[in-house]
Length: 324
Ligand code: UDP
Image 1 (tube, helix red, strand yellow):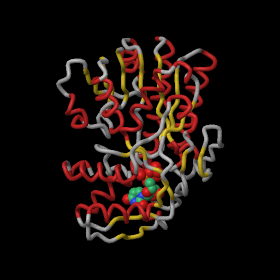
Image 2: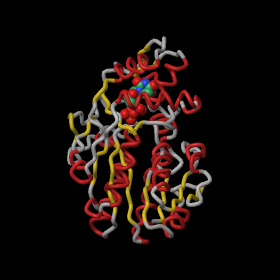
Image 3: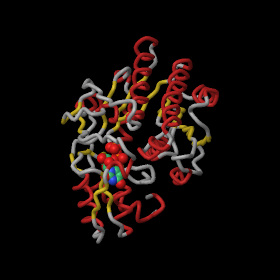
Image 4: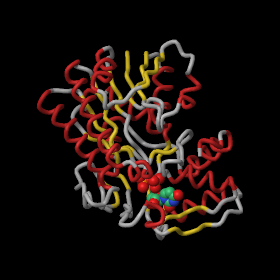
């Protein structure tokens, strides 16, 4: 197949692009190269079936040109990372809403099958253990910038769903829960590469808030095959799927485990949310998925444990300190 990966030079996109090329597909990457990096595609840079276009999904004619010549689109391009969202809120909102609208609309017009990457962030303040796709999205006040990311992604989901239901677009939506692994940068806020970078540098690990907030981290190598299987499955069309791990960890314990794994002498410092992200910040206190829908649909079951994830990020950051 000819495949377009928007955001293909990003963390998840580059792993997906590599996999698709290895499977014999022809891949076009559309990436703005801001959070995406050419180095992420270095292992496949000379691959004859890869072409990379530097451009924004907010540009409808660029999107149109890219989508017109492919059979399938993985839409991963987005403004990501809490530091990006809080620092450039309007730009992030525009990228995440307009970009997706352009992609969805072009996929509809050209009859291209589509996967839209969404986020567990859409569950907002819903702290239920084992969030299912039909659970409520409890997004906080629009005055709290953090939720603008969830709001944009929620709109993206609704738009995709309506195009699929009313117009027959072959699209599937995937809510990713804290995907982690090699090449993820800590620069935009993501906690695992940040802690690993801090531990390896002998700097204090900056735990925000009480550290009692809970996350479930899933290795990108478990996520990529799930994305491919869901896009290729016709019966997944017009549905939403959680994709993540159910192994819970508090952020405080995560810091301790990373210190232990690296043998670092770093200490842990507790930083109030206001200092980390600005006043009025609200965190998600617990975010634990129920992925039985994806399990039933495509046999999804993440294989890598949190220890595996930490080990692979340590290896990656050790090899490329700039990645942190
Ligand atoms: N976090 C932290 N220290 C950091 C970066 C993040 O304690 O240096 C916390 C953050 O406040 C959140 C959790 O780690 O509670 C996960 O943050 P991340 O940005 O990786 O993902 P998300 O908030 O989207 O789950």
